[in-house]
Length: 196
Image (cartoon, rainbow, N blue to C red):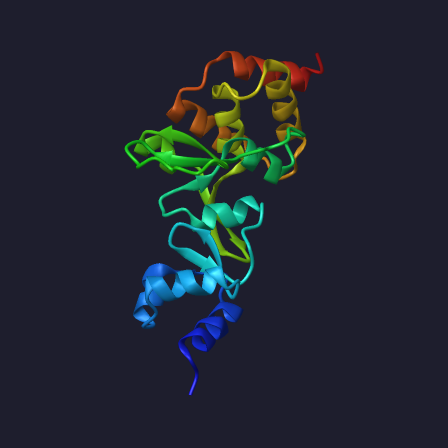
């Protein structure tokens, strides 16, 4: 017969992490989880989540451990799509307005009203499970609207998006109207296409 620790370790070999709630359903108390963390049998990944490995710096893992609804966005999504060379020292997370604060030093939170939050969300498969991410067009619009990039980097992002074979101008226009992106960015696109 397996011990509680043996059962938990076999579960973690086939799953990226276990929550404290799942462990409680397995008959494992929080005290036992803490004891096993202190003995380095398992590792605490974030509040209420445990795994076999220590927390990595992969943004996908950070997003997978934050309670939903949330999505990868901002500089993190720009890096994921290859639209910027900026160095992301935090994981940018998009949440709907009214969502409780994410108290983590490695997370930067972007809030949007629910209608804008749900625009352009897609899912990607990672080794930590499915996570939400803003699609290419919504990521570029958020970068143009936001204050986290300077004008030169915004123009560079826009150029790289236009060179991307998977970019979708009709989705960009639809999102632009829904989110109310300024007209000057359309002038930038026309100037880039004209080769100015």
